[in-house]
Length: 275
Image 1 (spheres, rainbow, N blue to C red):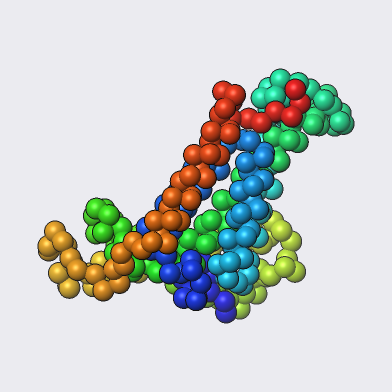
Image 2 (cartoon, rainbow, N blue to C red):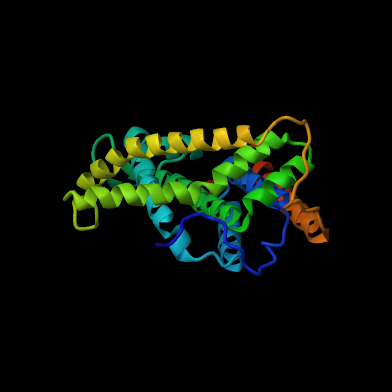
């Protein structure tokens, strides 16, 4: 069974970067993508995201299931925007070009389609950044890096444990899913979509209880080892920022600044091709 969203050491320049560098990239990339609605900027970010995803050598088996799950919610989000705000695009861009009158209250306009295209581009620019950050970052090294830049080692440990136990939560999910299927509950692609959603939702509570039990075990183990007794601690996986780290940070922050300048140069974060 393939592990989803878990760190795997590979011989790439991304793996050799410090965890702090990857965090800065992830935050700068995500914030830029969330702030801009400039389609030109988002298109460039999408291309760069796909290139970086390819360079990271992330295997599809690591992210395929999660990607399908995200796409399901993306479709729901896009449909919800159209259902509850079918004229949002016309309000933003100030024009109205009706392509098809679906009903009296639901005209399909070029402005609305363009607005929802930008929403989709936002998803596709951020998703690869999330995958790259998780699968190329050693949790222990990341915690040490956070502590090196002044963040409390308690916070670093919390983040490291969260990253470390993603595959364990996945294992628990598959065990519960297999137990349900052994009892005759069909959860594969053969079942209807709504039936699969209901069956999957029924796994959530057992998964939560299993995770709570693991939290208690981890807390007791850390307490028995005297965790938190001292204000500072040493790190086995600590790593200093190197030349490539500073270069990557400069490039990412520089790109973010240029992207936001292009976005807001006319006072609006929406690129309007209809004027």
